[in-house]
Length: 303
Picture (cartoon, one colour):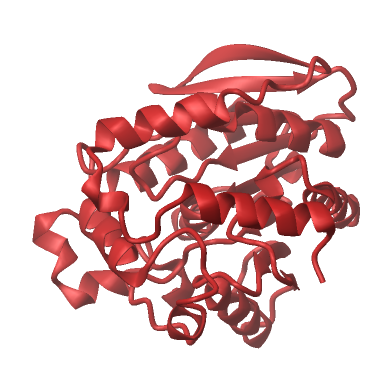
């Protein structure tokens, strides 16, 4: 059972979010609201923030006062592929960097619909390539992301393998969105328990991300750069996956873990109970703090 604070925050989100209304708001308004809400949470004073140009993609180094060796975190933010920014995720990336004792890089990939697929993927892979060339080595890099950023994080791993780039030491995916076919059982099973979005909203996001020429072509829904759940998942580094039992995207995480194991890979899956999509970003609840501790413990096994 979730903590009292976790249950309260779930109730608070339910009160403040109207499911099924996302696409009724102009994108600019949605982006402004997300920045206004999430940028109220200030990054810890235990880090310094430095702007950086990642081969043409804007980014930020977030550097804790205590770093071990060449540890580096590459973080891909979520936001439905059309929302999110350096401001919205700065505080969370700082918290993750602190507990990992790692220098963290997050970046502002181009957003849909102004820049539909493959712009976000191209930017993410470009930043990873830049990072490999400008750090102590890929063996010190953890690639992580939540929601849409979880998709991009896994896609980075797959594209690194395809392109022959050095692989990072491990991946961390939080409530990842990995399947644009929306075929997981939880899409229907959790339609009521999900508090943030509906299937119609997910389909709307798919349309924004893929663009008019691909959104109605089902072959694109299974393209491994769009839906990495359908890729060959062999040859990947160890991966940690967290999700919640109530979210519609739960089975993206569950099926991913099953397929990685079948492919002979190493994966650890944790499905929390009774919280909400991407809850580790909400530092005010004890489960979020515990999730970060578990990420750090998992990383210590491989760093």
